[in-house]
Image (cartoon, rainbow, N blue to C red; front, side, top):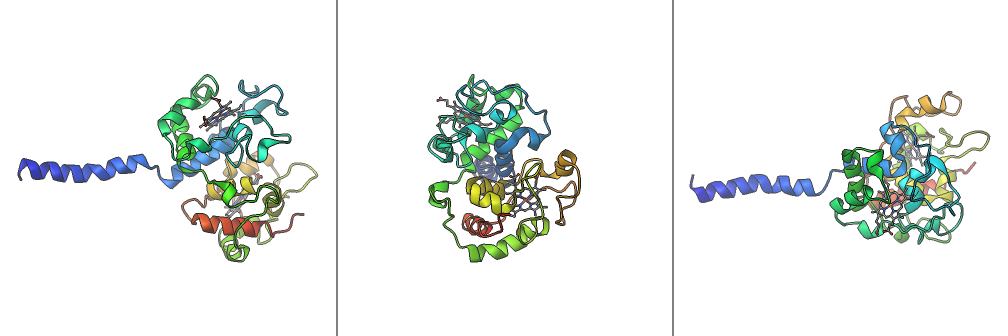
Length: 259
Ligand code: HEC
Ligand code: HEC
């Protein structure tokens, strides 16, 4: 084989590897989404007991909640320009939309900066995974969810079969087999989908952090009527359904009973 040929063969072998290294796989992006949601639950780490140093003193939250990415940047990733522009979650902090399709290394560096200080609580590997989510996992929710009415712009009828195929086994066909609320209140999929469609979409795409540990944390069988088995995680739909299908599924969850 001539040297020229050899180089060509080598480059053909290596180019796909390089390309692959550039776009992380869906499992990584989904895990990054669950870290964004609640990193200590996802990674079974100790829950912080301080308030995050970057959380404004004028904000209404204290303690562990202020360490969740979503608390400062929102379920819609739009921070002060989105659903958290007012109310008990207002922090006045900008969103992360500017980094969708951006540079993972820059996001990684931001997470270790003096504002974020996540290298105090997470390993570099986990920070890279959440950076992969920030760059590759975001959705421009304003295209699918009406800011004022919170109504999802999707086809609920098409979403019904997607829900029955992917969610009903654990949550039941009315979404009420698992109650998310603590204490006397109840919160089902239908409740959350109408109150916070952005959070519901985030959970549909990425799954729920630490869901396999649910019994361990909550205790008691009373609130579970679905066929969920302890130790089983809620699946992420990111690699299973197209975005259009995820939106149809979300639209269907808004038709489920709220109480
Ligand atoms: C306690 C609040 C807080 C939390 C929690 C938080 N951030 Fe931030 N984040 C900030 C602030 C404040 C800025 C803006 C800094 C500035 O203005 O330069 C920021 C900026 C960013 C930016 C750059 C946005 C831009 O357009 O410049 C990214 C990306 C980001 N954060 C990702 C994350 C991720 C991922 C997490 C969770 C691992 C997280 N942040 C958790 C407060 C927070
Ligand atoms: C294998 C079982 C399983 C499947 C399948 C499943 N889930 Fe879940 N889901 C769970 C468990 C367990 C939790 C954690 C509940 C808790 O800790 O309160 C959860 C949590 C959630 C939450 C978060 C509620 C909250 O605020 O804490 C939402 C929303 C949700 N599921 C919706 C869905 C949707 C929509 C589907 C289908 C795309 C689905 N789930 C499929 C088991 C499952």
